[in-house]
Length: 317
Image 1 (cartoon, rainbow, N blue to C red):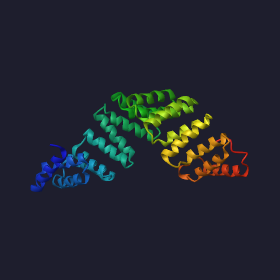
Image 2: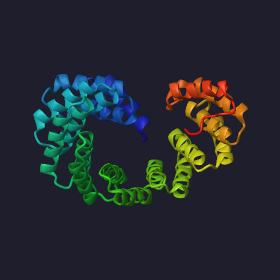
Image 3: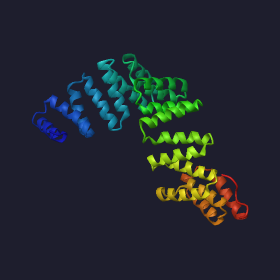
Image 4: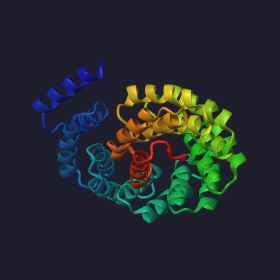
């Protein structure tokens, strides 16, 4: 019997016998699994009225409120579940996540730490505490927590990624590169790892490897406009203007109008002394201010100065 058949059978059972609480429990959980969240909440609310001291019902209600995008209601449900059942690590973990969802990070951290007191090898809690320390810009403690998460679950590539991010913040660049590389080993399609490696190479003025990593980023995620912008910028900076123009044309075809990309195209045309297209692309850049991160006033000034003296185009980005 598949889940839909079970759903229909349980539904008929409850229609014939509304007081069949076991069937209603099963139906509520099945609805959560199937994504019928409103229906699940209806049955959970009914059951909570009948069994107001059942911790598991409140726990499932918390899950349901999360799925319905009501984090405050989810928090209250998890609080009640923990109040009724005590130090259950699953209940505490979800309670911590709920506190984090409503911005109460200190309460979230406290409950994640309670989980670890019960289960010292809970890698998810170590990871979550690390994220909270990272939000506080406490890289030292964040690094310790991410390392503990990895110690308990080496295959957690998110923990490796976040550890790499913290190493980058603390200027431990080689360690950051090692962790990003581990991310790729564990999850070869995780494009952000390639992008961050590319950024490091570019900061180290290693344009060749930066370009390789950015191409890999875009191969894995064709929607990564930031990778496209950085690659175009590197082509311009390394004076590969023809390649830059070919690339920005492909980017514009794929993404549509992009202020930054038009500006980088303008700089390439300027260097190739095609001042007509230089001017046009500056105009296009200014006409797309929502995607132009270069200083709008400076770009406008550059265009005006060029029009006053077309033979004296601006020299740098």
